[in-house]
Image (cartoon, rainbow, N blue to C red; front, side, top):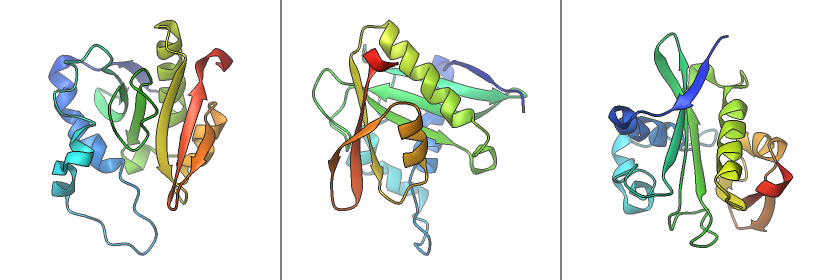
Length: 160
């Protein structure tokens, strides 16, 4: 499948709401939450006024002029927060486009962007049961802290 990875346009930033909701990992047998759950303060930190901070950066994957995935970073006090110098990752693809390598390509593009902009480390938090843990390890993230239900993962960009 042919896709293009490009920087998100300012007029497309509102799409991060959809991708934030898609990024919520729902374990097998757990009821899918309503989309309104993204209005909670702990999730709004990922998207509120995105693009207004100097460390905000987002890429999208596009197929036939349709955006099917996004990866974005910002320095924020989120689940993956390490310190005020380390951008945290968020990534999501629509379900029909998962398992095709698009997520890995988005991650790799973003890691190169961060390295080129002189960041030394990036982080994320992921639930232990999330199938994406394997992808994160594949692109260079390692587990630095194990919590009850999730891992805190870090990628040292000098290794990229």
